[in-house]
Length: 144
Image (cartoon, rainbow, N blue to C red; front, side, top):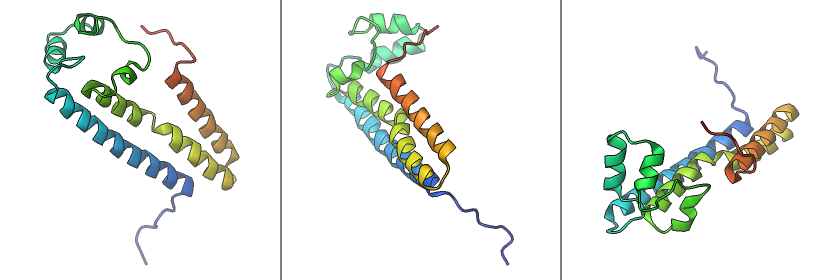
């Protein structure tokens, strides 16, 4: 007889984990290619040497953005306008990884509903909708 019992993982947890896992792997690959492209590009929207120097010298976020070639603090999904650049790819990869929770939560809520976990299915849907609204900026939140 086995000393430890094997726990059964619900299908909703497996589905959620697989979606998050593969989306995170994909986003990491996009970030890697974007970072390599950033260092290879001769003229970039955000030169890596400037960014590293500014961060390591202790400048504030606002000062770093104001001193960059962009000349302003970006709003929203600014990286979409420069998606073909290394910076755009890197930031898009990060965004993909962060927001991979959306499909994972939606699909796992379906499996939670099917397994009669209606309360958790509703919570998963609520979490997905909150994440979507934060992504598109429907609910403005005060910063600072």
